Length: 186
Ligand SMILES: Cc1cc2nc3c(=O)[nH]c(=O)nc-3n(C[C@H](O)[C@H](O)[C@H](O)COP(=O)(O)O)c2cc1C
Image 1 (cartoon, rainbow, N blue to C red):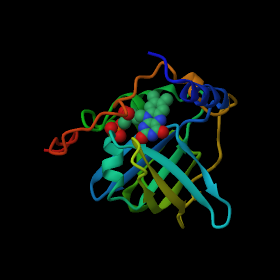
Image 2 (image 1 turned 90 degrees about the horizontal axis):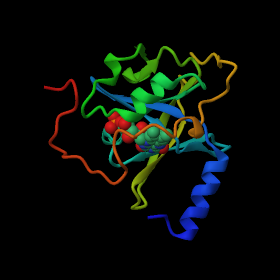
Image 3 (image 1 turned 120 degrees about the vertical axis):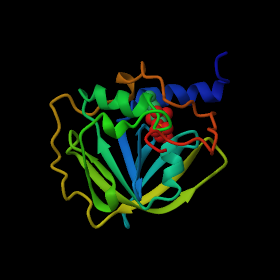
Image 4 (image 1 turned 45 degrees about the vertical axis):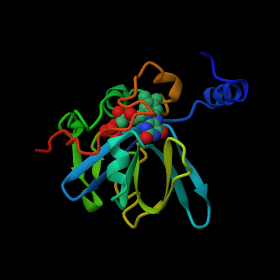
């Protein structure tokens, strides 16, 4: 079934804009989470604010409800492995951090060693408009950019059009069983 016309027009615009993809990671105590994110952008100049939208279906969202710090990693056009790991598998079933190289950053937030182009952000507020994603408004943390070297391959950012074949680990309308343990938990 094709979407109604206003939705189809929006879908077409979003496709033409062809946004860059990032991996967002976070931590609370010994728990870590992270997922591929296409919904993200700067949303204020002074003070600096950056918004990320997390799907209520995702384990990353559930941990984010309790988290203060988030790392946003820019993916390069050749980062298909990381895009697949963080976008098609869920921490509900797979310990993603056992399958990639990372270093604990501020507050234990995992910094992906293969993504030098990253910043660490602090949560300002979380907005729920009743849709299937929540908006996390953040500001640069004191640690932001400390390890950012801005290094990037010649291919530019990994864009939505290069990730169309990826099947998200959770469909947006899914709501997991809150009692289910995450991968790696007893
Ligand atoms: C191209 C693409 C873009 C995505 N964009 C977002 C997004 O903006 N926000 C989000 O929460 N999930 C997004 N996802 C879905 C999650 O990355 C995916 O469901 C992931 O497996 C969730 O992992 P988790 O349950 O460990 O958090 C996207 C997935 C793909 C393939």
